Image (cartoon, rainbow, N blue to C red; front, side, top):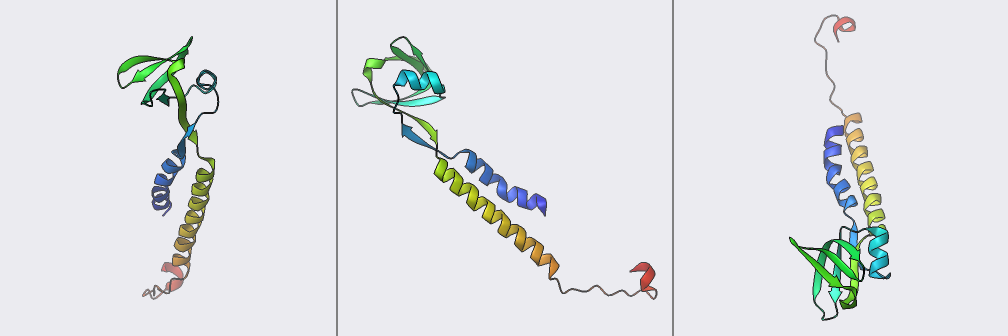
Length: 132
């Protein structure tokens, strides 16, 4: 029974770990990338084009990183806005709370289904004290 419950809750653990949102960065790109070392950032350039930069690094007055398999450098003067994945704390808390309530409900249902069983096994042995 515990294995079924674990298997039912396993996808929720993955969802809880994935609770994040793409949010605009309020800090300067240099300060944010240096402090947080994100895996990727979304850059809106001054010409309104959008670039997803993986493994961003600050090199002087330039952002360097990968777009697909190509290494690119973007001057900071061409960066209009920067967004990055941030934890969605409220949604994560809501998901964890709902998971706990669901797990409790499942556990309660499983425990109550076995305790109120009306099936009585009758012993056909002539000496029930010994074999039943």
